[in-house]
Image 1 (cartoon, rainbow, N blue to C red):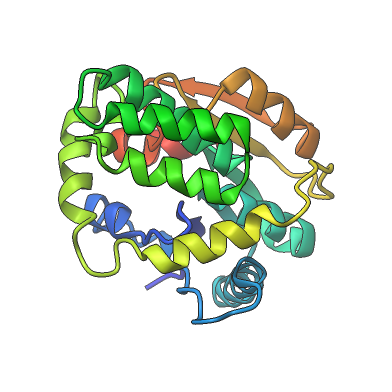
Image 2: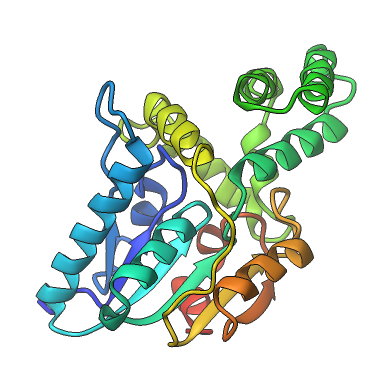
Length: 262
């Protein structure tokens, strides 16, 4: 069997690629890498993740004997940027699916969308209060208060998906997120907090190969116009596409449709 030609970086942090593997069980051309969990009491879990990503990518490229397509979803885009900085010669092209440059702001957009959808819910007031307190005193403690209040609202994960192909994807996501390995809360918190402590000023990448960016037309987490400007700073050569999905194009479109721009 030929080695995979696509190296996939799932979103998160703390998620696993169980959703993608379930949707594409026969996609042997893709290495659905399951990012490692944060080690207990790790001093810099995000930096550990960057190191692990580079190590795994170099191994996968060596097995393939050729440069690989890097396909990254959501938060995984930051890992793709790290690979482009440290192993550009091993990359054939980069495909970013709904990349979130600022995950904290993306999550806050989702929370505000959830509040608008569920204004009459019994816990909507708690979310409104948490959002107001964050506005008065931005920071990680207030952010996690928002996240906690958001979790009290129903069907939040459905908001990730678009109105066309999203209903089936949302049901599958809701079922699979309950499986062991689908999501690890401690890893998400530790890695997210360490990520937020870093300087993420966008800097032009040294990777000069093809880059494609897909934004979902119904993505509740991304302001495509604002985020496009950031990704153009990093990858000036990038081509941008809008697709009729929410935040997870790979779970609403086909693998071929997602890879087509690459």
